[in-house]
Image (cartoon, rainbow, N blue to C red; front, side, top):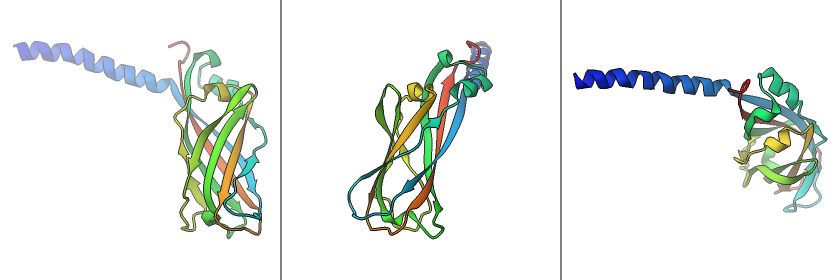
Length: 179
């Protein structure tokens, strides 16, 4: 009989926990941003080169609105993934690249390193996925625009500019309509 009573008490707890998990999922979503950079041909190796992106418009207010929330209800925004893909020249690979670091900056905020990849393998890759920080980037994404600074270190000379697309995916945890 005790087991039956304990079982009856356990059932509501199970449903309450499942309900909280489901509600929590309703307050989470992703925002994707894409930008392009050109890694210039190199004259030297093993020297870092900084490349700035143009301003990246966040459209954060409309992104938040389309997910039934508002800037004031955002708890945290993290970079969940970042990858880079060579778009030109067609035969180019990331074999020339030794290390890469990407930092974010926005008006009135300090520059912050958010992604990196060191000792990039020479295996003919046209796409690489970077390690990402777990820092809260809410202040940066809530701004109208932000910039990315890419710092590259090459392991060999390249005789041509290399165009690269950068895809960023940000995880947003927010309250929806105050829940």
